[in-house]
Image 1 (spheres, helix red, strand yellow):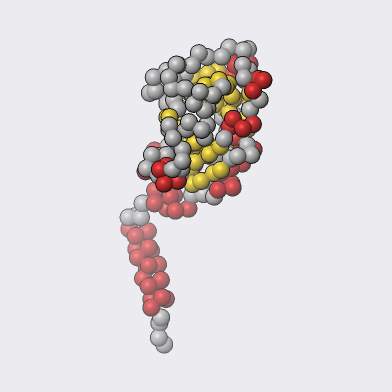
Image 2 (cartoon, helix red, strand yellow):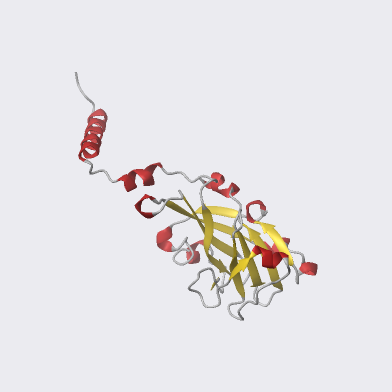
Length: 208
């Protein structure tokens, strides 16, 4: 009986896999990376953001399996939206609420950690007409970074944002789903906005 090359290669792969498994050489991390598929129930967050002169907002988000150390698996993706299109200019001095998942301009793309969610290396190819890219404060190490309590916002206590850059995003502590406070000018020379961004989980199912 003749064995086709395809079946022979498959048998070799299965045999090698079996040997590695028995010998304990197959890394558990590699298996987790292969089989992990993000779920809306997994922890998710924003960790990097950019805005352009035209007001295009790019958010870098991540979702992981909620574990620590070598068992942690993370997926990174982009959220792109034109936030200003749905804001009310008559409410510029008050906090406006935006649900990111249901924003009409939202576009989602699987990203790559190695190129910072496609912001740096690929933006000239993907968004050549966009200019004036500004990185938004999103990290504890950023000068002027602030974490906000939702109770303070509810009481009308709004933080004072740094003069530069023209827009910042503050993480609102202990909120579920996670909320972020955006303050500043989305467009160069545009209106000053205060927006409570709500990061839901509906988009996670949609892109995986």
